Amino acid sequence: MTLASGREFLMIPGPTTVPDEVLRAMHRPAIDIYTGSLVGLTDSLLADLPKVFGTTGKAFLYAANGHGAWEAAVTNTLSRGDRVLVLDSGRFARGWGEMAKMTGLEVEVLPGDWRRAVDPAAVTARLAADTAHEIKAVLVVQVDTASGVLNDIAALRKAIDAAGHPALFMVDTIASLGCVPYKMDEWGVDVTVTGAQKGLMTPPGLAFVAANARALAAHETADLKTFYWDWTFRQGSEHYQKYCGTPPEHLLFAFRQALDLLLGEGLDAAHRRHALLAAAVRACVTKWAEGGAMELNILEEAQRSNSVTVVLTPGLDPAALRRWCQETCNVTVGGTIGEIAGQGIRIGHMGHVNAPTVLGTLGVLELALKALGVPHGAGGVQAAVECLSAGLTEPR
Ligand SMILES: *Cc1c(COP(=O)(O)O)cnc(C)c1O
Image 1 (cartoon, protein in one colour):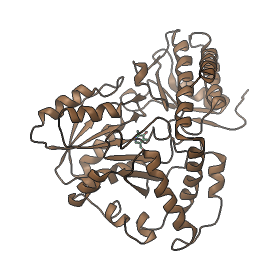
Image 2 (tube, helix red, strand yellow):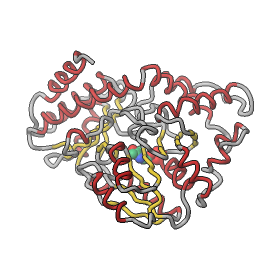
Image 3 (cartoon, helix red, strand yellow):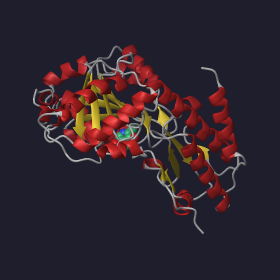
């Protein structure tokens, strides 16, 4: 028999569950793009986005996915032949580097480890060796969705400063903004990119980029600029210029509603919610791991992301586990990708997640382990409950 009828739980690391209010906000006719409420909507988004990024810099809106935001960041600030240093800690910074290469940049990857965060000392060492300052930008992700790592962006800024290096610092927050604290100005980040469809609870199709004064100054002389991504054109006075064409109206309606939810909850409260739910996921998986069939991919607790948990599963077939959850219980968790493809699962817990969605997902995974005869430590879900219970009663 099956228990799959009813709502699907989409627990992959993006796209994530879109709240009903956000879906409803899109269910309306298109409106004029030259005058009226859409112009005010754009202004409100451009005013609120910097708050979410933690910057007083400029924000740009793109009809694009995260890959588009990557391209916007590098083409607006760099020139053909410039060298960029990619800080590897999984799949995504490398992907950003692959894109940068095709736009005409020299890309160097600082080798990383899929089970650990980027080592700030290695960054300082590499930049200190670049006495001619050939490296023009440093690219890193805050949370790598492939490995489940959380990089310490403030520490990486300090690492760049310790080398006295002037490279622009660019950070991908696609799988972390709205989920974990991010302070663009305080941490000295020059360009931040993100997408709508993960922590920001909006359907895929919008990308956002924030640039500080240093990045805007670099933009003046950058020669990789192309018409669609160009920040100068997008700062023009005509409304359509903000989107370089027709605004993606319905996604904007959705994003406004999603921002209202996020800012209504409060960024700090949203970060605490993600932290506690993620801790519950890790407590549960740690219990299951006592059976010897699985382990958390990221080795150090402080480097584990609160938006996605990557679990290596040497003692079970991850595809069979995922299929069972999907077919029997309508719960979808992700598979691993990149170097660890086929070796584990990824549990997304970002955006519109709460205790029932997380406990429900963990309950179904535990049921699957039992049904498939996978050896696992007993009491995983109980450990998650204990963790939530302790977190909810903790004074703050
Ligand atoms: C999802 C993701 C991307 C890619 O975003 P797309 O919208 O799929 O282009 C980039 N970086 C990180 C960290 C991601 O999680």
